[in-house]
Structures are given as C-alpha cells and as structure tokens.
Length: 388
Image 1 (cartoon, rainbow, N blue to C red):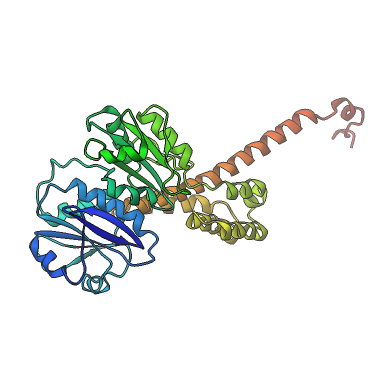
Image 2: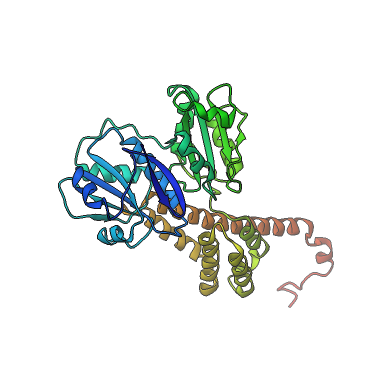
C-alpha cells in the first residue's frame, strides 16, 4: 500500500512505515498508536518544503526498523494549530510517554532529525547506521526527478556492498547539509521496471539532473569514486565541498561583487567616499536571485567600512562571526552560512592585502628607477656650516 504526501502542490510517494500523511481525521489515532511521533509540518506555497522533505524522508528510512517511531507529515491547518506550528517547514514531536507536543526550531537536516528522535525516545541507538541518500521505488522516482530547482543525482544499483555504492553514499554524506542537491538510489533487482526508463545494462549506473530541467537525465560516464564524484558535482553545481563535508574557502564568494571590490579597492582601503561603491553593490544585490542573503551581506560590509571610514572593521566583523560559530546553539545550516560570510570577509581582506603589496612593490620599483643624480647634487653643494 502506498500513501500519498502532498507538499506544495506535488504528490510525494511515501511507503507505509516511513512517512504517513496525517490530517484531522486520523491525527488522534496516530499520536496514540506509538511511543514517539515526529511531524513534518508544511503549508501550501512553501518553496523550501520540498527540498527539506527529502532530509526528513532520509531520516525516516534510517529509523524504519524501529516500530516505536512514527514519521508523519501534515499540511492540515487544524493539525498545524494543535501542534502550535508557526514556521514552515517545521518539526513537531511527541516525546516518549508525553501527550504534549513540542516544537523544534533548529536547522532541519537528516542528522538533526535523527538526533531529535533519539532524544525523544530516550533509548540506545549506538548501533544506528546513518545514511543520507533516499531509497526510491519506481513510484517515488518520478517525483524525485521532477523536483524543480534542485540538482539530482541518482544511482541504479544491484548490490548494497559495492564500492561504488558506498562511495556514492559517502559523497551524499559530504553534502548532507546542502538543500540544493538530492541524492537518490534505486535497487534495480527490486524495481526492475526502472530499466525501461534508463536502459542501463551494467551497474552501478549513475545519472544526474540539472536544476533547470525536469525529468531529463544525463548519464555520468566517469569513474564512480570519491574524488571523481566530488570533482564532477562541484563542476556541475558550483557547490564545492571537501572531504569531511567542509566548505571550500571560495564558497559564498560572489564573482560580480568581487569584481566591484577589485575595481574600487583603493577607495575601499581609503575608507572615504564609498557612496558610489555601495550604490553599485546595491544594484547588483537587487538583481541577485539565488544568493540574496550573501549579496546583501556584501552591501552590509561595504556600508560598515563607509560608516567607520576604515577597513579595520573587517577584522571586527570576522571576530564577530567566529564568536557566533562557537555558540553551541548554532545549527549546522546556519554555521555554514556564517562560514560563507566569513569567506566573503576573508576575500575582501585578501584583496586589500594584494592592493597594498602592489602599492609597495610599485613604490620600490619607482625608487629603483628614479635614483638621485649625486653628481648633479655635488656640483651645486649646499654651503657648509663653516662657510656660513
């Protein structure tokens, strides 16, 4: 039996035992049935909800063997009111033995959801093996590939223990906090009809989907290993990560704003008359659609330099970001946004450093090529003290 999960106009398929659709007609039955219930709460026209849903689905599949946990989803206003949910997408849950719902207002990732369930269950989950790909059936597949505005990477496989499958899973773990990429897997032995759609003859086989196209797969022809996949994904998506999931030092840096800073680096360093520089950055910010927050941050730091009339505020800004990142309450998604902003500050500081080096180098070159004419100086000597 398949239950349908409507999220922002799409019908996402969920296998019973993973994510159940809940409304006011079955809400009471669901919360009384199991030890722990965790809700994924959405509303219509929520653009972020589809992206985040797959993090929730991945968590449900990691914990699918635990019969005391129910993963549920709702967009029913009545249920939303009972759960006292006011931000979307959101997470609400019932802890072990409790009849009072709690809300979770932190970052929503596969790990944070799993950790939340572990806390709510108060059990021993030390044996748990975390996974960050989503296992798909043929019915799930079309909704996965049609998810708009997202890069999708899909592996068809026969054997779970194949090295390529494990490497693919590890890469998905590296991108586990990224909302713009989905990683899915299909076991072709259990879903043979999939072969009619992809025509693959050898496995594992990897396909990818651009965020700008729906249901138009492209076959990946390179080697399926960690380094090759990281390089390929970084090239096709622009979202580069290092082993361990760390962000590249250029992540967050926006080239158009960098060019503005390079063009006006002398004015920025002088810290005076930045009005036209700020205005140019503001115009760019209005045009930026994908990274509005980061674009606005460029404007923010330029205004700080303008107000203080010194680039020393960049060190103060970097220290402020470091203090925020050390806060234990900062979630993984927000910490990465802070890292991106720190990368921007570092890039501006580096640009100023290069400007100063070039300036010093230019002055040294000028001094080397414009030496004083000592003979000329001697031919018109200044009078000595004795001559005066």
